[in-house]
Length: 388
Image 1 (tube, rainbow, N blue to C red):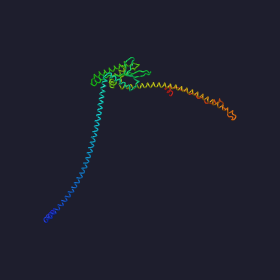
Image 2 (tube, rainbow, N blue to C red):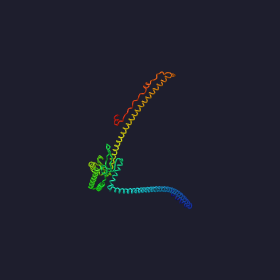
Image 3 (cartoon, rainbow, N blue to C red):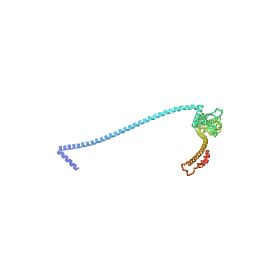
Image 4 (cartoon, helix red, strand yellow):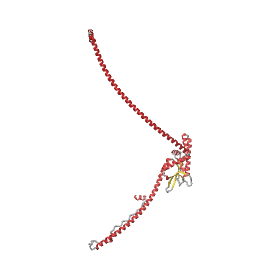
């Protein structure tokens, strides 16, 4: 503080002694200070400008990146929206096509249902539909020559069964298995309607009516179409729908009573197919047995022909042996004649060994082969016993 006070006093004294110089010095100092401040400000301004320029460039790059990202995102959104719209149009088009197809199918089903209602509402048409179902099943499992349609089974009767299977007994006699189609639709519909209403009494009454209807149809089949030995001792009552068969089969003791009282078996489409399949196997086994008998007859004829051929070969062998012996005798005789001629030739030396006699040459011929044994064909059972 003392030094500063002294400097201040010296400055005051200098100001008082030389005021003009003092103010000039002050002016120079102020000018220098202003120049220093101007240079510093300019430097700061340049740094500020550079910083702002760098920030501006960063902002421009960021703006470009943001713009590119926005454009890419906008393009992706537009592409996604276009794809979504295209898929939506395709889905809508497919759904409309399916809807139109479904409407067409519903119209077809409606017309078919109306036709089915008209068919099932008429008793004669309903019976024809059941017969068509039966005929289709028979055609699927059997050959056309294994069954008959609309056949009169009783002599002098005009009653014709819907179908009759051709069967054969062990003796070869032909008889038939009658199959008749029935469709008690009214009783079945009454039963279903009572069950849907939850009316137990009406359901029980409809069940009794359905059972009575089935028993009546079974008795008619037994009286019209079962006539042994032209037919089997039982018949088949065919119902053309599985639901109706299941409903009848649910009635207690009905199936057994049909078999015991009327000798009639109830069948739906499924178990009738199984019955026809087993019958087809049986018919095939019978055909195989008949074919085996025919083959055995052919084998017997072939054995007879073989025996005749063996006899002819034996006769030919004997004739060939006789011809061979004649040739040997002729050869021996020619050799003896040749030897005697050689002895009679005076220009040729006589042989040292005597000429063989004709009888000796005949004794040296080949022995006769024994005759071939013949063997007749034996049945397969005897051949198997001999092999054992």
